[in-house]
Image (tube, rainbow, N blue to C red; front, side, top):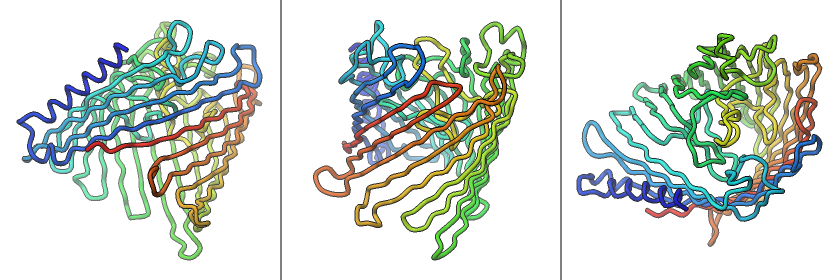
Length: 439
């Protein structure tokens, strides 16, 4: 409970600063706060393999108190945001708890409760905003994971500018992350690595050439691990009574940096996990994808293809090798980052298709469903290049539209994965989200 009290004290202190006599009317008048709650049941059944226990089954409740101030008056405005998060275990046991995918591990079992929080100082000049402190980026080169009870967060600074019409410029540097199943901050790494980096630098641009055409470019550098370039294009073709066709093209080029680029550095723990050419552990990857989404009324059909090059797996931030710091890393800006698998193995070629339906057309607004299937093959392993895997996902969401429980959201995710390079798994997630505005 010490962690809980610490988070609440930090948040209370931030609110106190926000409410000080020095704050302007805009600082206070534009402030808002809410309490978000998430009830989450997670069940992952490993269908093969020797590791025990074979099944993760846990249930928890999250409370997230979020305060956002306005900005002070003047050419240069200042503000302050604060967040406090508390997770409570409702059901788990040593036989049901595997790692810390959702709930931290305490003395070999799931922690009874855990907490964390953060404060973000912010400044605004014209249409440019600087934020420093607690951050949750959502960018092609970094997507904060929110797939469990509490979200993943980062510490650092970010500048976002919209001063030029139709152009968004973003740049920043991050130093630490707190995993979705942890209260402890850690440095940054890639999958399989055991050494931390404390410098992730990035920048990029989103430019709307027309209202239906977006082009993107981003660059990221995780010091001593990799440099990454991303280029993207999103185009929507309106077709009148025949719906619309969206084209989404994505390309990542990732190469080694610093210690990962040298044999000595990789021997010291800066080695990339998974298959790499010659077993060196050096990062060297090109990944591209093309997706086409046809929408007509309540129907949406997606079809696409993704190709990962041969010399290493796709690489982005992942703290899975840092023992005791919470598992895995951010989500990936890939269509193939699904309920269970990510389809990012070296050499992997993945075809995918999805059908989604909005039941508002049948008189049930707020109810949406989708089913997706992915098949990857040509996976490179130490034994050859014939590995394959597939996954089928079902998604069902409903948001109450009126009455006492208006805006309460219910969700169910069901995934089935069969793989020649990973354990076969069946997974279910059931969750309820609700937010109460406080000011």
